[in-house]
Each structure stands twice: as C-alpha cells, then as structure tokens.
Image 1 (cartoon, rainbow, N blue to C red):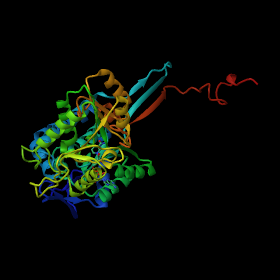
Image 2 (tube, protein in one colour):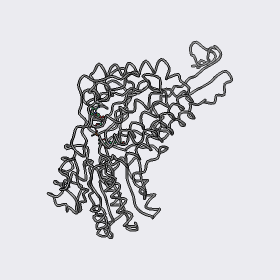
Image 3 (cartoon, rainbow, N blue to C red):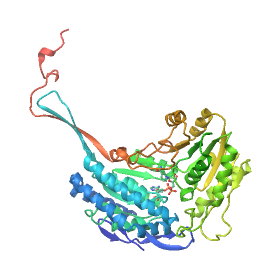
Image 4 (cartoon, rainbow, N blue to C red):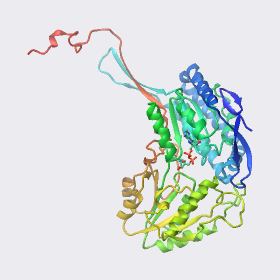
Length: 492
Ligand code: NAD
C-alpha cells in the first residue's frame, strides 16, 4: 500500500480502500482511507508551508520548481502511465499521452506565473500611486475525478502553485495510485506545499471541503457532487470552482468529408471508453447524408478492438466500474425500448468474461425525450439523429442543461462562424474534436459549471486582486466634507 504524503512525510491510513483493475476486476493494491484528523493535518501542513515561505516566494523560483515537476513527470512517464492503466483501465498509449499533456501543463504555468503580474493604474497626482496586486488565496483543495487523474490534477495544481497557493490533492477513490506516486515528483518543493490525501469522497473529501483552513476548492466531477460541494462552500462563503459534466453535441454538415467525419465522431465518442467530460454524446447529421455517414460510422465502430489497456492492440479499454457500466446499459435499453435502433454494440463483449467492458455502441432514431440524449451517459455510446436545416441543428445542439463543448464538421466558413457564435458551450471545435490547448480556457456554460481552467483564466482563478491606493503625503482632502476645505461647502 502506498502511503499518503502530508507535510513532506509519508502517512499510512488506519483503514484502506481497495483499488480494482477494471480490466480484470482483481484488486491490485490498496490506498489509505484518510480519517478526518488526517485530512485536518494535511490542511494544517499546507497552511504552515504557505505562511512560512510559499506565499512570499519569488515567481521565478516557483517557475523553476514547476519546470522541475514537469521534468520529473517526463522521466516517470512509463511507470505512471502503467499505474494509470492498472487502476483506471485507459489504454497505455492514451495514458502516455496524458503524461505528456500533464508535464506540458506544468511548463506552461511555470512561464505564465513567471511573466504575469499585477499592474500600476496611471495617476495624474504626483504624490499618489495605485497598484493592483495579484495574491494567492492560501490553501487550495484540488478534488480530481478518475477519468484523467493526472491531467485534471495538473490543470488545478500547476496554476494554483504558480499563483503562490499551497495545495491539498484529493484523487478519486478509484484511481489513487498514480497520484500517490507523485510524491517523488513533488519532492523538490518545500515540505507541505503539496499534500496528497486519499479516501472516499463523502468522508475524506467532504471533511477537506468543510475544513475552515481550506480557502479555495477546485472541483472536477459530477453535477450531483458539484452541487453539494458548491452548497457547502456557499454556506461558508468559501471560494470554489466547479468543472462538471457535459453532453456535447457533434454536428455534421452535408459538405463534410463523411469518412473523416465518421472517424472523428468515433474518436470523440469512444476515446477512454466514452468517459471524457467532452465526449461527443449527441451526434446530429444532415438528413441528405445521414445514411452514408451512419453506415461509415457503424463500419468503423465495429472494427474497433475492445480489450485490456495494457494490450497494444486495444482501441477501447474497459469502463471504470460495474455501476457506471450499468448506467450506460440502462440508457441504451431505455432508448431501444422507446424506438431507437441499435446499429452496433449495446452489450458486454462476449469474448471478455471479466472486466467492465462495454462494446462501442451506435444508436439511430433517437429523440430528446430519451435519457441517452438528455443525461450524461459517460460511456462508449454514440446516438445519431438527423436534422433538416442548420437552424434546427443549432437548436438541437443547444437543447441541453449542459454546455461544456460543441463540435462542428464543415468547410463552410459562414456556418462555422454562426455555430461558434450561437453554441452555448465553453469550447467549440470545428473539424478537430477534443483538442485542448494549455493556453485556451476550458470549462462549461450552464450546468457544466461556469468555471474555467487552463489559459490565463486558469491562473487568474487562483489569484485574488488587491487594489492599493497610496498617497505619499498626509494632506487633508478637499472632499472630506465637513472636515476639509470649507469653501467647497454648497451655498444654499
Ligand atoms: P464524482 O463527482 O463522483 O467524483 C469526483 C471527485 O469528487 C472524486 O475525487 C470523489 O472522491 C470526490 N467526491 C465525491 N463526493 C464528494 C463529497 N461529498 N465531497 C467531496 N468530494 C467528493 O465524479 P466521477 O464519477 O468520479 O467523475 C465523472 C464526472 O466528472 C462526470 O460527470 C464527468 O463529466 C465529470 N468530469 C468533468 C470534467 C470537466 O472538466 N468539466 C472533466 C472530467 C470529468
């Protein structure tokens, strides 16, 4: 069992959580299930490190340490990627990519933090100075889900550290192992600047959220848990940001290269077994090309190989757990019961008796009354619906409580412009789905949370602004009525 990392010390847990390999259903390791006292201790350690040195550390010194973390991640890519596959099921290749993006995120915020500062507000008064300082909040709690455990950790921890905050990390209970292994990568930081606490969300996680020593909660996860955490933070007037679920639309226009579009849709729907917050969960295709497009999508989907993530031949790995697979299957069953046509998948693969696998699935003849078009499915399911006019496609794409991302496939610039202007989504991809850019903000409209990570916005999120107004002299001011210049008194 790997220990937690609190105040620069390794700390084991009294009770434990079992970590299950989703490809085999076997227990591969255990992780500490932190007690409330251990959660408090991590917050105390973070606070002490913040007050002692980190909040006053120079931006260039922090930048060097963030680059060092990026170097450590690159050196340990193979080891960490293998752990991610073992605990999360994602194909090894995808986890190697995740490590690359994670390291790049630390490099990006090293330089953004080094180069970004407050500002001077020009003043006409020779004796006055107006400054805007950018200050950290203090102790940031980073709560991370299991689908991209290290990448989504980096989106919080890198900017939070660059801004001068100390951090407590709480990984998901399904995927604590790769995160615990990061203690070696963070070892160059002053003790307590980063702490790793594992445990169940509703116990260890919630104890951390409620701890008065936590100044800021950065959460990525489900809408239900986000509402709960948001409520607790609102009650305590504690700053928090919420990155929640999605139900992304993917609109294919009649001019699209249908072969490429079908592959793009499959990639966007089945990557990480569809367990991506920006998975394409609703596909709308123009009626004139719907049949050709759907045939190609189905052909391509059926050619995908489902299997364990350690097998280099695997295209689609297992889902994270039985509960999640049951929900996906329930969405598919309900849709079929209500008239949807199942064109591919829709069941566990017969040749894999163990593991939480689900065949990549394509549904047609769907409508918005079905859960598969309304609620987040979060699995390898791609429902396809045809549309008549571009107005209708935009209306359907926006018909969701969520607004994380939206995709369009077309070479028609007028349609592309109209789509990105009208889409109620935090990211719009045209002809290149699911591509993130460290410099571009990421986050959702509507019930997807309204917060932003990455980009300059992602650093700004972890800093608060302080306005300093300074007069070098001590003269009475004429507007201090009735204490100042009495000649300014209004004559009645
Ligand atoms: P989840 O909400 O169940 O858990 C997320 C994290 O919150 C875990 O670390 C968990 O331990 C913790 N947690 C659970 N209950 C808690 C509580 N009461 N107090 C404090 N912490 C608690 O989500 P999940 O099932 O692990 O992840 C899947 C969800 O995450 C999906 O809805 C997906 O769309 C969303 N997601 C969003 C983004 C984004 O950037 N918007 C990215 C990835 C995943």
